[in-house]
Image: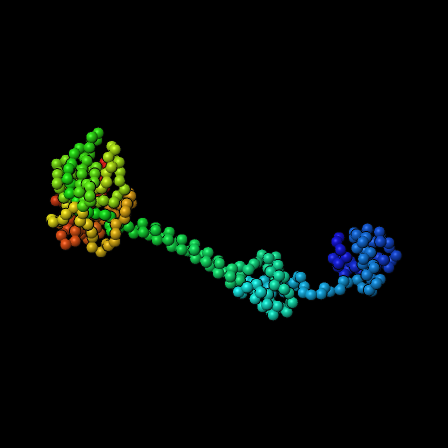
Length: 314
């Protein structure tokens, strides 16, 4: 047992009662399991002051009564305050308890509450939630962008096949040099439409797929082809088109991506590219065109799939 000030009124009365029954300090301490010094202090106080209860402390109380604790807890949970001092002032007004802000702070910590229940804390929580929401919006926008990839992401251009030759060490693949309006021709590896017989032939090329390596040769573009079960034809730009002319689709505007993955292109775009009954290449029914010069066509294949990958070049 600690100091005499920590004894209950009942314990103090029992000590005095035992003393009046002629019990010794040793006997009282043993009987009540108290230190002899504590028993002696109680008896001396009783003899000197005629009382066993300690005098009330001066100044503000260091602990709250249970009903005051309930008031403080309810205020901290249901209301917001700009500062701890404001909360303490409102608590003193509501409860009548004369306590300091430090006591209020300690009681809040013991309750498992803190200043974060104030407006400052809630503002920090809102800011944190806002950051999480912003990240979620960005992630969603990125996913939506992938789900909504359309033909405007493609860098389709009119180009000229300058030269074609078999690719050494392969069966049926050809190496082409194509002019797409840049300072130097690009190299293309593919197997499209008996290209070994084509020189100085205009074609439509996809220029922003990720380059692939075939037998040590970089394939830097794709010659767009139209395929049927028994035939393959190169998609041709309109008459008057020159290398580098952009091939676009009305209603699908925007700058093309710098680089695309062929698998994503096939997944999101490939199924919507077909020729119509007039052999005109379309995306979702809208013609591929060079603005001011005309539409892109296959020589003879109508209602067929338009391919954006070079077979065998992967």
